[in-house]
Image (cartoon, rainbow, N blue to C red; front, top):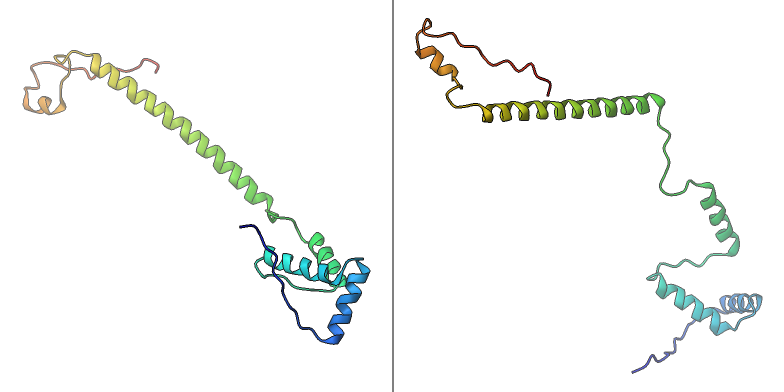
Length: 145
């Protein structure tokens, strides 16, 4: 089935009718075209249409151009910007330190894995043994990582 046009009837006062006819004459269109345009606009905007005189529409457009565009812009004090930049630098520095620490821990774990189990002495074992038996040296990790 195709789209069929339906007829809509409007009842307006005689004064309103004359005003609508003047609008149609100004725009050099038929009175029914004025109604069709209105109904099309009404449907396109889910019934949220307000009919207003041209001077009100022009005033509203002028007001819109004077207002700020979207998204709104907010002026921020320089102290806030500086503090934000300082915190970003500090966060970057902390991330670098964390990466350095992770590399160091990885290096220590690798060294521990490479050692023979006989060379590894647990601190708990030191307490149980004689102090005179042997002298132990806790590993030196002076190498760069």
